[in-house]
Amino acid sequence: MEQQTTLTSGQISIMINAQIKDMVTWLMEDFKYSLAEALDCVYNSELFEKLQDLSTGLYFQSSSYNYELLKDEMKYGKIA
Image (cartoon, rainbow, N blue to C red):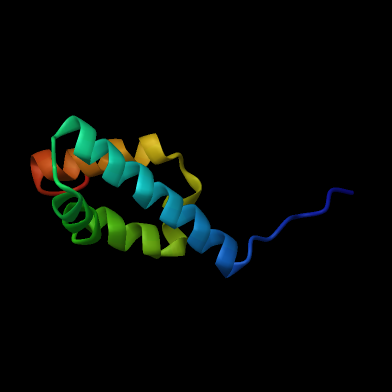
């Protein structure tokens, strides 16, 4: 019988924060945003709200997957 592993809220927070760090770094590299602009972009996005909603499972996706969603939101005004 397989034992199921459950992540703690602290572990999930670390995963989300790591993704935010990656996305902010990529925004600064790809779009030449300042740190403040990149943080503002991420923290005021629909994606950030969905990352915080654990029922979406987005926290469990890769940073690059979520970055693509963020770029879609930036381009189309919503997550495509």
